[in-house]
Length: 252
Image (tube, rainbow, N blue to C red; front, side, top):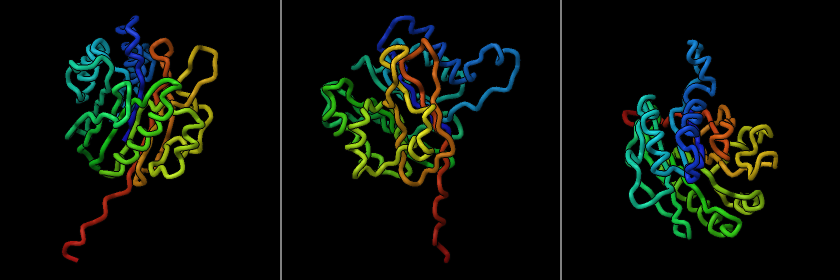
């Protein structure tokens, strides 16, 4: 499974249509529209896309592109009761099963997780979320990360890909007793792909966006993808394999 998680900065409505176009060129065409139009081979598209900071405007701009590329979406239409939410899109050989939004127990910002069961070569659960923002959200972030960890263990194999907003010191606190595995650590912590959010151009970045995995997964690759001018975050992409399901003992 190739999965990509991206905070698309949709709450900033400036030039949202043009920025979504730029993101889609990166995701579907590898960022090189001219080569794609000339008939060059395209990079493999992800099977699963997880977006954070989606708004009605962003959803409307994304919807046509995702459907044209063969993706199912949840939610299929913009949510009426909130302006900032999560979006999951999948394409064959995966299909969306049961989907729900689970609010975090502690969140002043009404944050939570989109939890989806995926049918495919190996049925699995996929979660995406956007943990509490701002320096003042530290205790909420820690509680939310532990809640995500519990949800990942409910139906394995499971994957979380999203914007955790976790500072390095907070991750150090979490690592003890945290059962899910961080894909970035599994591939040796490549420095070139460490930063995923930059407060301003030219300043050091932070590793806010993460993939957490249950133990059944192996990580074949991990990389960041940037679309300058489209979002203040980089996307993170993983190529995952999963151990085969154990054979039934019936007839033994």
